[in-house]
Image (cartoon, rainbow, N blue to C red; front, side):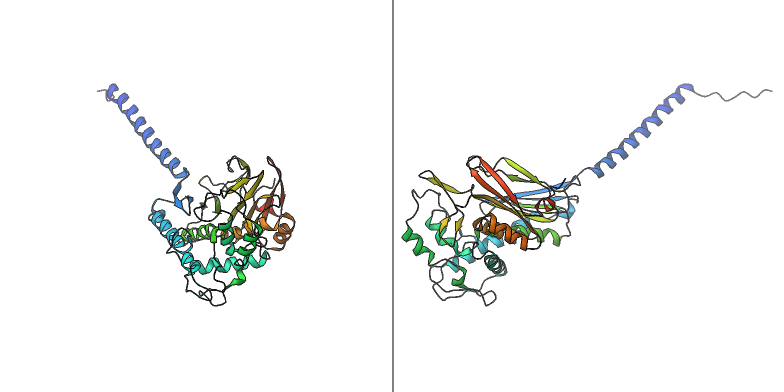
Length: 362
């Protein structure tokens, strides 16, 4: 008897094949989506206000778990620094030190002491062009805390000479660790030219303590970068055109440094205009007058932000010739000077290694 082949339900067979294919497609799509998600650049961004400006911290290439609790840690560290160095807080360490009478000393914390010692170092390197005791001069010229940069007219020479008597780091004895002593009743400190850089370094250390390697810290344009961004590329930092009318909004150059701090000091952020002249908030502590040497801004690239911050101010005061000579003598420091040849035109002068360190070499 012939054996008849089994009869299959053709409809059921045709139904099962598409369902099998559809299941396979769904699985493949899920795997592809998971793979794409794994490759998707990740970046965690933390923003806030500190020292009268905006801070931004960007962390790339890690999970949310790796940055859990980081925001509160950042805020806490910034609060510690402000409690030490803010001139807007009468109970801060610096405000209490400034209120001391002559020949009095005060025990200070690590943050204050570290910034004072860094200031002394850069003061010596720049032959006094950087000086954190410039506060009485800033007040005299209308650039002190809470001022409007509109004093009406420059102070007279007698006022400047009298104020200069209370300016100079030699008027503060810092020979005893964490125990600075005032040697003049009117000498006062202002860490405005270095505190943001110190805070940038401090936040970078917070991130390193968490074993984070790819990040950017920016406090009011004072920047430190480490590793790469979420796209695997070097971090990009825009250098502003020193335009007083644009308030530095137009990007002149884009820098791509690696594992470095980039800080700029300029004459276009705070100033007043009187009798056809611009008077910058950058005061030469040796003469008591705002800068008039043609330097519009100085950008410094270095390993340390606090060091770069103080140097940028000191180099502005020194001028391009003396400043570049100093930079060429310092290891791991590069600088770019923008020199104002007219109100709407600048030329640049760079240290020999600036382009390479800034990631600008072709």
